Length: 184
Image 1: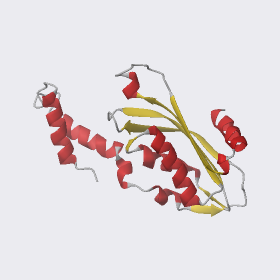
Image 2: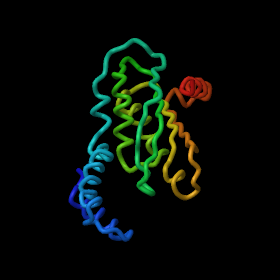
Image 3: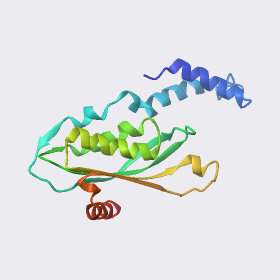
């Protein structure tokens, strides 16, 4: 649960710390705006992917289910700057499938936390494996990190790609085939 009062106090101190006057007209409501924004941005802190993945449907299909180009926005836990991009999620059902929107909701649960892209990729794959009891799961995330583009090395357009495979996707032939599908 986000503590808006603490966030407002911290933002006020931050503004003072950079030499600003938090009481000037353009900034006087900024601490409250940022507290409301953080409540939205970090909504995944209070969510569990299990909630979204629990509604399943019986299905005889045991072929790859792939949802790609799921747009997400997250915050780098090292600098509290955004990183954003696309997630591609695949799994091989074992008697049950989940509604497609639930895959996107699972991405959101983990994106809306202070995060590392590498951890987020694994968390999504693990949640799908654990909750769906599927034969395999694979997640590929492509993202641009503002901590690399607007500060530090300053390389806009650089994309970080992470890939996690579980179960049947750990087979190299299967992994390569699915990775190609995700990149199409």
